[in-house]
Amino acid sequence: MFVLTSESRRQAKDALFAAFAKVGKALANGHRVEIVDVLAQGERSVDELAREIGQSLANTSQHLQVLSRAGLTRSERRGHRVVYRLASDEVAELWQSVQDVAARHLLEVEVLAGDYLGERDEVERITADELEARVAEGRAVVLDVRPAVEYAAGHIAGARSAPLDQLVSGAAALPSGQEVVAYCRGPYCVYADDAVRFLRTRGIDASRLDVGFPEWRRAGRPVAIGATA
Image 1 (cartoon, rainbow, N blue to C red):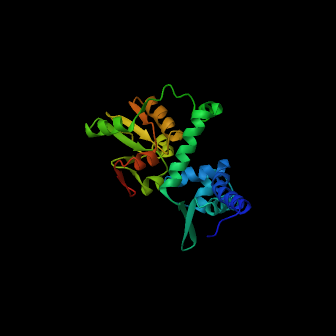
Image 2 (cartoon, one colour):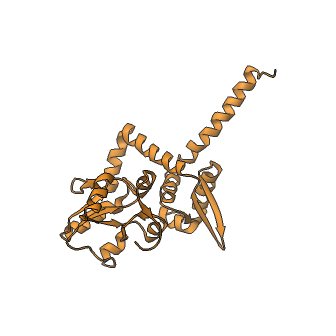
Image 3 (spheres, rainbow, N blue to C red):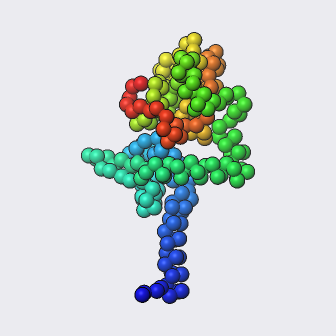
C-alpha cells in the first residue's frame, strides 16, 4: 500500500492550505470586497462596477481577475460586454460572515460605520418579520432605494423602485398617508438611512429594514425580478 512520507504529506497540506488562503487574499482589499457587495445584488458589467467603486476600468479589471482566480466570481460575454456575477450564493454568505465577524471583533468597525452612515439614532430599524407583518396588514409601503439596475435584478416582492437620487430630486413619487419602509443592499448600506432621513423631513413616517435584499433573499422570503413591481 502506498503511504505518503511525512515530508510529502507536509507539502501536500501546505499546498492545500495555500489554496484556501487564495480566498482570503482575494478579499484582502477594500475595493474587491466592495465589488463582492455590489455583485451580491445582481450581475454587473465591468464599466458599471468601475463607476460604482470609483476606480478606473483597468484597476477594476485587475480586481475582478483576482476574484476570478480565487473562484469567487464568474463572467460571461454578451456581445461587446462582459458581465460578472458571484460564483454562488455561498460567496455572498461568506461576505456576510466576514461583516458579522468584523462587527463583533474589530472595535473600529463601529466607529468607521458611524463615520460613514452618520447618526442612526433617528433612523428606526425593523426586522424582516416585522416588515412582512406590516405589509400583510396593509400598513406599509416598501421602497427599494438601490439603483434601478439592482431592483430589476431582484427585489422584495411588492416593493416599489425609488432610487435614492430620484427620491430626493422628486423624480420618484412620494407615498402619502402610509408608513414607508426603505431597504437597500444591507446593514452597512447608506441609501436606506438617507432615504428615511429625507422622508421624515417631508413628514412621512419612515423606517428602514435592518437587513438588505441579499439577506432577505437567502432567508427564502418572497422576491420578484423585473423593472416594475
